[in-house]
Image (tube, rainbow, N blue to C red; front, side, top):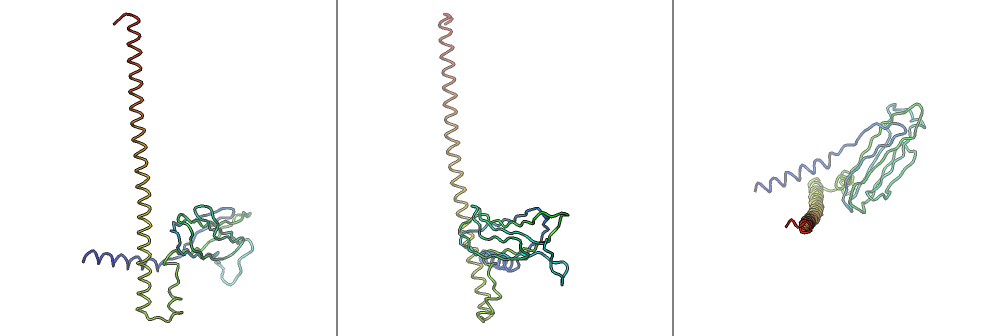
Length: 213
């Protein structure tokens, strides 16, 4: 009973975290590049929105305030690229597991400029706009909450299998490393014994020639 309560509590906490994801703000100097990485499993939905923060509302941003954004996978495949833009967004389903990287670049400028970037990146369950789902489907509140919890449980289930696969890969790597170390240790011992035997044979031959033994 206690274990079941802990599982339910974990699901509720993770569901709350998934729905409370906030955007990230950071400064980008002209002529510099900043990258943000996210470890994403395969066949997962990911969406991102970004824009240059305008601190002078009512006035357009100057032409110098532009950025280039590129999203790539761990294998170097490009999933999104926008050049010289103020804002943009991307959405795609990952085809491969690994680190996905979003890089922001601001062209060089004299004098240097500092751009404030707002970036919102969501993956998995958090990438689904549940508010719009509820409005479009006109579902009841309870059905909506149950459906969201079901998605959270499924995401946790998939994540556990993903971690289990990673653990199996690490165990296989450890076994392979231990096997190689055992072979290297045996080879080293054999080599040492061979060298010692040759030294004994050489000394015995030397003393026999000198008629010391």
